[in-house]
Image (cartoon, rainbow, N blue to C red; front, top):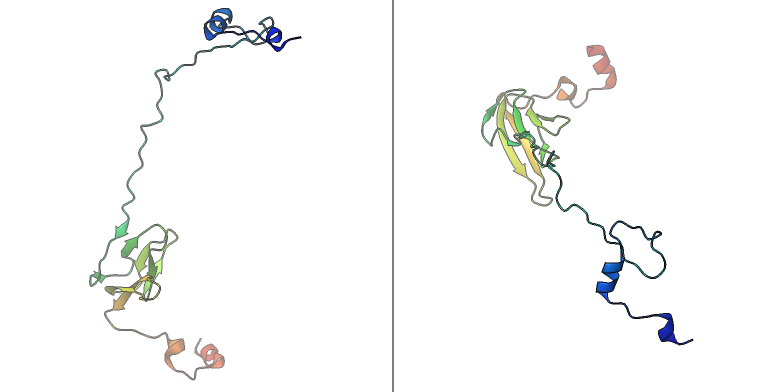
Length: 146
């Protein structure tokens, strides 16, 4: 059997005219058929995927270098630790840096690592905790004080 007798030439026009638009591949009887289906190119009128917007988070430095701060004042609101807490500065669970003692804000940058620190220089000066006041204090002395 010749190769040409098994396959005959079919042009595109003939394929389109013979194939039913709504027919499935199993309904067609023999031969090669193409099934064309139209899909909507636009979504129908209704809800959209846009239209939502979140509220601003007001991040950034709130108290700049040299400004006077009181305990509880927020110095920096941030996501992650762009600024790290230094002396007399606390950090909240959302990485907010706040003041622990009355004083002035000072920013410092490590030259080697590039890490930025925020310190508060107390107005009254640095006061050591009584446990660290004398270098020869022992555990027994601390228990006696309590």
